[in-house]
Length: 124
Image (cartoon, rainbow, N blue to C red; front, side):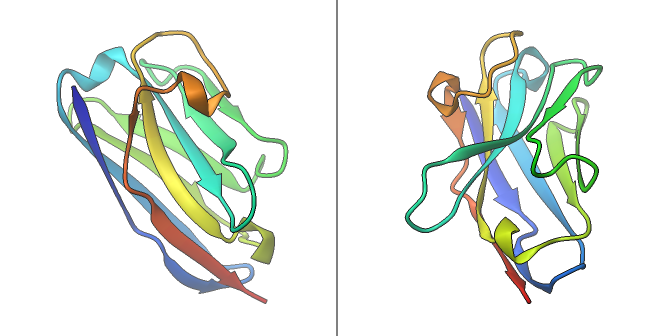
């Protein structure tokens, strides 16, 4: 069992930055692929970024490439999402998720553990 808690969301102007954090507790964090997903009102949850267990491979949605950076610190059981050059269309609840597999997946239904989410609002 893994428990995930996100933090770092908030209100920011377009062009600004935020850093989201995901704190994990429970079983060994190192064995899990970690993903960030987001869900805007009236829309389905969508893939944002994924990082493999070692941190050696990272994958991003086309809409965030070059602006968002995913990272992790297995020793601290933490994952991060650095968000730069934010746009109003980035407004959503952001979720951290963990998958008990070392295979990469963009499908949120293939993730086993989820945090409660943190709201990110980007004003124009």
